[in-house]
Length: 166
Image (tube, one colour):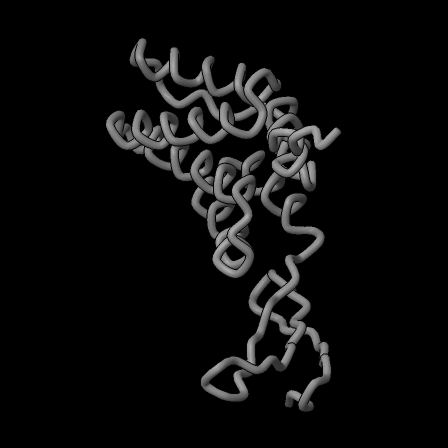
């Protein structure tokens, strides 16, 4: 239940995911409109990493998808694309892997062009081009991916500085 002008919180349990829900009532030109925004599960990256280590790439994809659909975080979407690319790679679908890794490479370059994830994606793209089978992802690679995704606000820091008014 949402109280007018108030904030209400509660826990929602969906399978292995638990998300805190924050409901906020706002007013629009069309009248009162109740909006619900979910705060991401703080352990979602740990669950993602565990699934990736097990080779459960589709499960890893699903772990982040609910949060991404609600909050539209570019870094989470990038990890979803990586998991989806490995699903295709494991199933031998080279074209799907190439498309997804190209999207990942573009996003990573836009956010963090000289970071360690950019190097990692380049290695994966070369392996796909050479026709190598799906290698799986090692713990060090997963740590790089999750650390990159957990960097909050990096996108804002990359914006150009305001013009000098002096």
